[in-house]
Image (cartoon, rainbow, N blue to C red; front, side):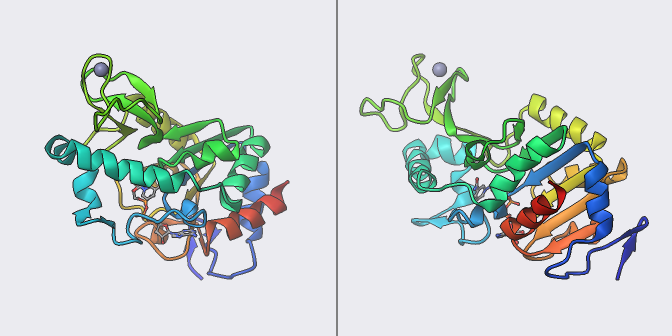
Length: 256
Ligand code: NAD
Ligand code: ZN
């Protein structure tokens, strides 16, 4: 048993939630959840590091970058069309649905996600900060105008904006900055959180990975849910080993 700042760290017990965590949740108003690709794994969407990240002969890192897009815009567009065709079949799972309930239970609940799949919105969450943008939108590379996911191609790959610029998915690529508005808001809610959940994220991608640490430094209880330990685990007040649907479902049942 490892104690951190007076909280007893959940010691990988499979079927028991600590009373300290439940008490903390029952009195909490400002609760934040940060989610990563792991929460969508049970909806059939591969995690970033889980599927080898390969499509045809390209590495995901080379496709999800502005350099890759400028070199081979048609290949990058087709890769995203392929991903969208997989995402179009996906439905929110019990983990997403529990977080939609959290938004009703806690007066000040914010969901911060690194996912671009749109499943949290489909599950019913409204107060969402999409740190890495959304695959459900496109954006003009030249003028920034936003477009829906499905656009007229008019024989051009990628399709073109009214200004003539190339369209790209409205996601944040490697090496690109996050939206300052979204990031500022995420920093603000994290620093004011009473309980902060880090769920299904490898906690390696910056600046998302700093949010749980900021929250904890400012006094939040830090709860991590993951099927395996991450670089964050040693900092967590409560580590719940297992799937997000399993643990979030259990927590929801105990706090309603
Ligand atoms: P990651 O792939 O680096 O890490 C996924 C984490 O989820 C791992 O720590 C893994 O142990 C954990 N995990 C796997 N299945 C789980 C489950 N059922 N329950 C709980 N945890 C589980 O993902 P990341 O940290 O989000 O970073 C990768 C980047 O790529 C992010 O920007 C991410 O959003 C993006 N991405 C998004 C999607 C999506 O939108 N669905 C899919 C792949 C990658
Ligand atoms: Zn344009």
